[in-house]
Amino acid sequence: MIGVVQPTPPSLDVRGVRYAYPDGHVALHGVDLTVPRGERVALLGPNGAGKTTLVLHLNGILTPTEGSVRVGGLAVSQDRATLAEVRRRVGIVFQDPDDQLFLPTVAEDVAFGPANLGLRGAELAARVDEALAAVGMGEHRDRAPHHLSFGQRRRVAVATVLAMHPEILVLDEPSSNLDPAARRELAEILRGLPVTLLMVTHDLPYALELCERSVILDAGRIVADAPTRDLLTDTDLLTRHRLELPYGFTPTPR
Amino acid sequence: MGAGHAHVLYRESASPVHRLPPEVKIVAMVVFTLAVVATPRTAFWAFGAYALLVAAVAALARVGPGWLLSRALIELPFVLFAVALPFLGAGERVELLGLRLSEDGLYGAWNIVAKGTLGVLASLLLAATTTTRDLIVGLDRLRCPQILTQIATFMLRYLDVLVGEARRMRVARVSRGDDPRFLWQLRGFAAGVGALFLRAFERGERVYLAMLSRGYSGRMPAVWQGAGAATAGQWLVAATVPVLAAGVAATAVLLT
Image 1: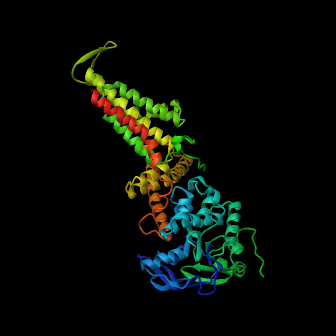
Image 2: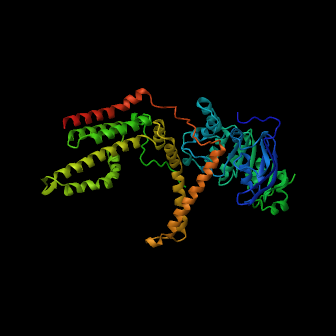
Image 3: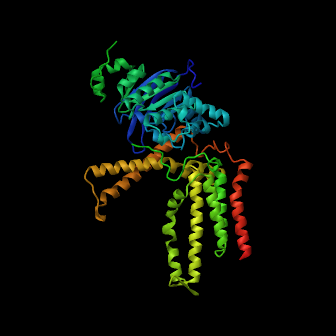
C-alpha cells in the first residue's frame, strides 16, 4: 500500500526557515508551515516567491540558514542516513517530467528510487507494478519515456516517487503544460492517492479542486493560510500577491 | 511534436537471432570480426566462407540483402582510400583491364574492402537484431565500466529531447526570417548552438537534482542486470558463428 495515514506527528513541519543564497539574496524570510497526515495543501504564489526554494528544503537538497524542517517527526539534517530516509519520505515530482525520467524505460525509472532504498528482485518488481497501477500506466512499463505523451510522462513521474512509499508527495506545478483531459485525469489520480500532498501551483481552480487548504507564499513569507475557497474569494488578497483567477472563473463563497 | 519510434537500424522481429540475449551477440560479433581481420588477405576462399556465414545469419534474422547492403554504404568514405592503392602501390606491376596496376596495391585494396565490408555487415546484423537499450544492457552484463554504460544510457534517453529542442529553436529562428545562405550569416545558428549547450547543461543540473531527490548516492543501483542474462545454452548457440569463423581463419593461416 502506498502511504499509511496515521495520527501524529504531522507529515511536514517547517519552522522559521530562513534561506539566503550564496550570493546573499534572501529567498525565504522565516517560513512556518505544518501539514498534518493525509491533508492536501496547495502552495500558491507568484513567480520568484520562493516556492521551489522551499520545496528543495523539504528533502534536504538545500539547508536552511535558520530554522528547521521535520518530515513525519524526523528532523532533516545533512547526516547520510537521515538524508536517505528523508528523501524516501518526501517524494518530489518536478515540473518537467523529462528531468525526472532519465532512464530508457518507464519500469527502470520507477525502479530507480526503491532500488536506491536497497530493494531488489520480486519486492522491487512489486513496487514498480503497484506504483504504475496507481497512476494507470501499468501497460506502458516497457515503453521509452520519450514515446509517451506529456500527460503520461507526468503520471509516470508521479509513479517514480510513489514507488518509494513517501510520507508526503510534493508536486511542482502538476497541471502545467497538460491538455484539459490530461489535467482532469491527473486530478482524479491525485485525489485517489492515500498520501499527504503538497502542491505548488499557479493554477487556482486546480488548487480549489484538489486541496481543502491553501497557503500563499510571497517574497519568502507565508502571507495567508486558510481554506482554499476563502482565499480564492478574497480578491484583494489575490491581487496583492500577483495571483489571478482565470477569466470567467468565480468561486462561490461558502 | 512527433515522438516516433526512432529506430534507425533496429528491425522489429521475433526471429531466433532477435531473441538471443544481447551480450552473446556482442561477443559473437566481436570474435567474428577478429577472425576476419586475422585472415591472410590471399585466402580468398575464407572470405567467401565468411560472406556465407553473414548471409546465413541474415536469413535467420529475416534481414533482407537490400536493407543490409544499402546500409553498408556507410563504409564508402572509409574504403575510398583503398581505391587509390592499386595506383599508388609500389612493387610488381600487373596488366589489368588495360591498366598497369601495382599487385601489392591490389591486394591491399582487396584486404581493406573485404574485411571492412564483412565487419560492417556483422555490426549491422547486431544493430538490426538488438535495440540500443539492449546493447547497453549487454555491455553492462559484459562488465563494461559503469561510467561508460551510464553515459550511453543518458545519451539514449536525452538525444531525442535535445534534438527536439534544437528543432524547436531552429523553427523559431527561421520563423523570424533567419535564412543563412553564407558562412558569415551563421551567427544565429552559432548562437543557437551555444544556447542549446546552456540548456543541456541546465537540464543536467535539474536531472541530477531529481535523481538526488530519489535517493541517488553516486552509484546506479544494479537492478536488472541479473534478470534475463544469457544461459549456457544461448552462449553455445551464439558461439557457432564465431567458432566457425575462427576455424576458417585458423585454416587460412595454416594454408598460406
